[in-house]
Length: 191
Image (cartoon, rainbow, N blue to C red):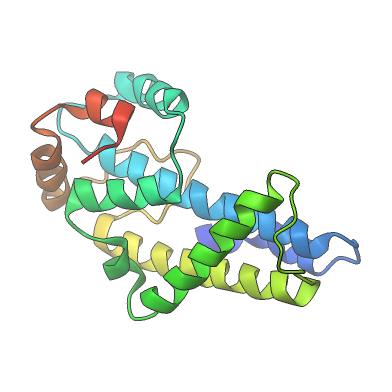
């Protein structure tokens, strides 16, 4: 396992190992945040590979993401595919179909839990731990696949906005952004 992934999920392990009554739901919520953060950071890193983006543009990228009101994990998965023509399913690998179903269930649970609503599933701690395990596996497999394919796993380092110097990625991103440019794409995240 890579250090970025291990470090990112250390807080989850602490929660799960605690005697806090709410450890199941807390670990689930934090795990989901880490999944979306990883996808956002991979998407931002890929966007930053555009040949016409310079260090001074980092703030514009952050502003575009901040100003976008409807980004979710599916938006970032679409961005990864659009920018590189590599679907997340290829990065996650053989377990993608099973884990994607699990992540879909987790997302529906997330929508309810994050808004203080009941899921209608009477999720006990064991069920929440199982969802955390699915999210963790997804993030780990995505981390390995993205690091191998793109040179960045979505966890390592303090920032995702750096050049990885992979000519094939620069070419793919430039081609994907040719029609509208990187700023317009970052503001809309539409293919």
